[in-house]
Length: 514
Image (cartoon, rainbow, N blue to C red; front, side, top):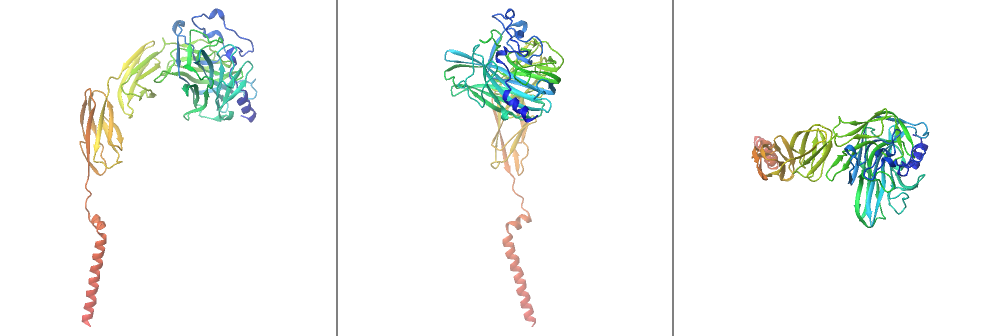
């Protein structure tokens, strides 16, 4: 990309127009009042056909149009790209550019007022040379005429003007595009409270681990009584008539532009933090609404063949509507007595905190393995899940079995194998987390030591257990070499003495002959 195009993107890449009121064709849009009731929102109120912001979004609408609401401290958007190329000749400076937007509504109560902000975490892609730059926008959705001010929040960015409102804007790497693997992108926005003020981390993962590229601090909010985080509400619109939804969508590169998808084979997923782990949303539509950027020539379908529910994107055409709902998926709830550890589900790892794990999964059979914090598998089972089901399981009580060694020199590594699972340590103790049952163990050999209690069986029966292992240092074998090394000075003196005596005797013998 030429220098001008990079500057163009980094300066005017304002990804949306306030509240979605100004749409792609330049006309003024309004809500279809006949389709909006006081009890439930209507997701197709802004877009009924492509071009539209297509992908995956949660409006808080479940099976049969049943409304619901929830809030979360964090959302993650997942994009797995096999093929993606876009083109719009009318964007002369960057015709191959497009945006992937994670769009969320952030809310908190300060004093007697409740505030709403539209937070955009965006990857802008050049689909021709496979480069990316990450940017964020924040808009004030608290009321129809609400504005962002310099006093509203602080971050790495600055305040800018769009055609209808002020907004906060920041571009990573000074707006410069850079190459990346192009196989997957993850966007994450995390809300928290620090020093009494609401904050948001803006993060991305382009295959090289998570990176925080901007931190938003709402400095005016000094009397926060509730930090609601990111909200999804299918019962009511926001005060400015926008949706309280969470979405990950494809759109034009910015400034209310659209683009055409030329080639596409990718999946998109939307996860929220449930207090223990990241969980895919249970109800989803195939489009967003609040943003003014969109795409055309895309087919969005429910990817039921994957482990987690996702949107599958190909070329074609799709009418904005429902992607899947909770009657199509299964919710898996697991309680573990092993805290703050992880599981593997069909080989994929999921971390969780505390004792609970909640996952939204497609129907199917899953191999589930629970690991302790020491990395050994402690529980394994296959589960079959059906559509619309809620499944709750528990691992049962677990107990610590601690092996304690004595006799090893400090810092010597040793290990224990229990039913073939091995742990190693340079300390005195090795602990396994196990369930009731009978187990066998072996102690691998340690050079220079013999072992007492090097193998055996033990039973876990409702209580912790301890097993002592004794190492005895083997005596060093005495060899002629060791003897010579230990006494080489003495031996050397003796040899010199013997040589001297022989020499003296020879001299005397020679003298006597004369």
